Amino acid sequence: GENVEQHPSTLSVQEGDSAVIKCTYSDSASNYFPWYKQELGKRPQLIIDIRSNVGEKKDQRIAVTLNKTAKHFSLHITETQPEDSAVYFCAASILAAGNKLTFGGGTRVLVKP
Amino acid sequence: DSGVTQTPKHLITATGQRVTLRCSPRSGDLSVYWYQQSLDQGLQFLIQYYNGEERAKGNILERFSAQQFPDLHSELNLSSLELGDSALYFCASSRPGGANTGELFFGEGSRLTVL
Image (cartoon, rainbow over all chains, first blue to last red; front, side, top):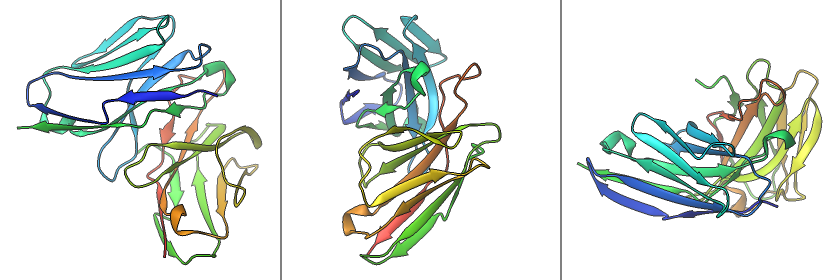
């Protein structure tokens, strides 16, 4: 089955700096790569996703890049703000196969004011 | 509000007991997924149902079982509970098929504490 590795496990940045989280996946058939943000005590919520036919996608301060050949994808957050502090999870799935998401281990991001 | 409803929100029970967690998916969603999140851990996939049928199975223990009913709500049954079963159990739903955007909508979770 699919295996998703995520690094780093914790990330501390100064407000205004950029944060980068990297993930690798094992199943070359995976074609959907979402990122979820989970604030303390809350449910995971989708913040951005990318499909395998796209190399990069951006939404305001967040962007995701995908390298299918290397089987890795990354989340970039620019101009970080205190409200970006949360746990971020990457995931991978095969959309046509029911979209069972396999999650990475998570990255705890702390943005220091 | 994601539209996914989970009950109960909190549950405290003793080792050896059995509990049932309930999930109502978003209106129109046919797929229900169950995930387990232990303290400071990631989201471990347990099982997926699609329109009443089991679709995919993860590392779900034999002591755990689930089903999806004709009205599409789902229940996760946990039996012979152990201390290590203490976790936050999330239900998520999606709408596979032509309208599938890929997004899973998570409920608020059911926090299980086994003493």
